[in-house]
Length: 232
Image (cartoon, rainbow, N blue to C red):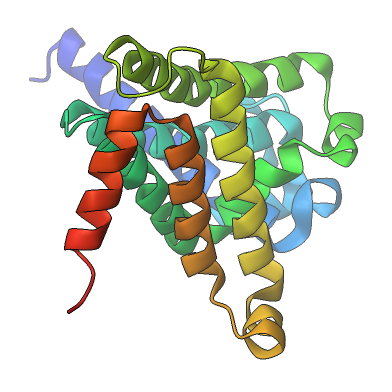
């Protein structure tokens, strides 16, 4: 006979599984319709659940959109955390974070578009202040991780002593995001018109920004390493 504790644990597992089903359905509908056009009826149909069941888990589509986005942010956070946890050195870690961001864009393009939409005035008009604040709090975890990494680089003498970690985190993130957005919408146009690959542009842009943040000795080591890896 199943114990009371066992019954409780089973019900919790079932509840989490159902929550995951709802989130997957909501994500699919939001990707296809967007926040404004999506309805709870469509999400319920996609999840093969009653609309009433959805409301047992989420207050409405705003709440669901938030949950989908936070799940995506946590995915990116975990990827970044894994890279930083390897302690490969500040410069190598920043380069690897850039590569991870590109990979995330390739594998989760729709989530990347959600992140971008969250920063637009249209999104701000459609959601409550509470939802917006929760989105900001989730996003700040990633910002803090990057800022802390840059601050560590300053403390270790790898990055310039006058470098502002907060400002430079914004510069790195904004530059990468802007180029990825161009990749999303105008990759072929840039390739045909200017004969440039935007992914390569992003790597070079990050390298230039990174060099500008380094101390003189770190920059020389970085340039020497780049030269050593040039094809002969």
